[in-house]
Amino acid sequence: MNLILDIGNTLQKLAVFRNKQLVLKETFHDLDGERLSTFITRHGPFRSAILSSVTNHPAILEKVLHDTSRLTVFTPETPVPLKNMYLTPETLGNDRLAAAVGALSLFPGRNVLSIDAGSCITFDMVTDNAEYLGGAISPGIRMRFEALHTFTGKLPLIEPADFHGLVGRSTRDSILSGVINGITEEIRGVIALYQQRYNALAILITGGDHELLHNNLKINIFAAPNLVLTGLNEILDYNDQPG
Image (tube, rainbow, N blue to C red; front, side):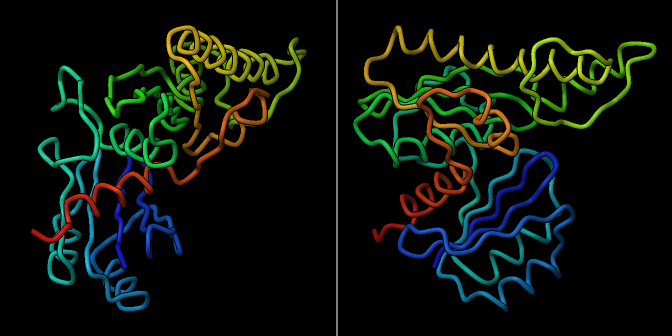
């Protein structure tokens, strides 16, 4: 079995894969060495593990993984099963590249666009000859709500919620309309631009807010909530081959 540790900006995810199938996933707000050790004792042993982080993390997490499995720490130098054409790979987020690898594993030989609706909205493009090109980054849902509250004098900070209307008849609904409709139309528009350039384009959406946006988009798009974890598992297998 493989153990995946994905450390994001706000959450940490532990996932277990057996024969490329996700069999267990747990999410933490404050994962520490003790919790990680408990997870490994309860669900292991694990042959191999990969640690991916987009932020600073306690060194003890890496030590625990190193002591209990063959550990791959995902860095810009880690080999991946696609050709990375990004001009500044040292600045590329692990989550973006892992999502691209996951998309390639689900749609090999296809042009595929992955959309990650998390802290930011990211678009990542992989071509039908397995080249990762890059994509786009824009503010996510919560970031837009927080910006409206922080950079104005009176607008309240509201929680994300589904909104299917157009005209907001209260300040809360006006904010929801602006943010939810704005992001939905932004994603639709970006998808249309990619579809004009790349034939037979497969489109995936993942991330913490993927369900809310997927319900509003109403277009042919595949929900893949574990896309980054799938990509990390593919990267681990790619680096854990004999010889």
